[in-house]
Image (cartoon, rainbow, N blue to C red; front, top):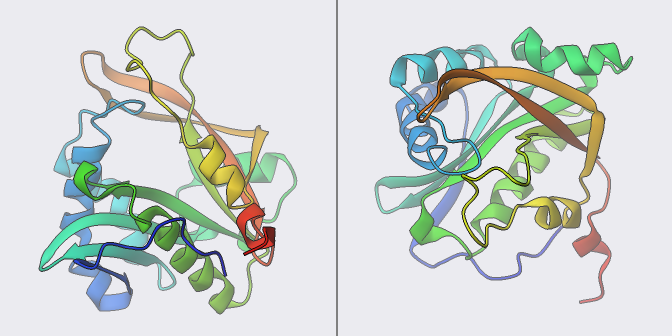
Length: 215
């Protein structure tokens, strides 16, 4: 098991939520997505109606999972996952086009965490728990997620912005440029726009770079 580079803050409780308990947390996840994805690189001008439509697949799937970070009673972070076969066709189509079996892929929707709680190991905990959930279901060959593509010269990119590619690679994920999808959402200052997202994948039983490093 991967060891986080820094321990989770003592005030935080990170735990998995499934089944009926997941249904009760849909609005918590929606609010976090709206708050966090408003920033670069998503620039998402979110609304609860869109969120409820997006999260409907997670609510309907018997094998979906939310991993939530609590500071007391407040949900300050969330990550999600479900079998790719239970998600919308737009997420499945890139895999089908490449001849991959969507029934063997477990999809990670997002990891969102309020700024004041970053840098204390929660990101690793989100991946650890979702990967363990996928392994525990016993029928998946890989886990996957998708990240939005932005032009390097986009003037809206914040100065000094650092992406997450090194973090994802360190966990053993590989960027798959042949697996791309188009997804629309309302962008701040732009309105409705289509965006390109590229998938990253990792074998369910694969070792991350950090797993293989001496301790």
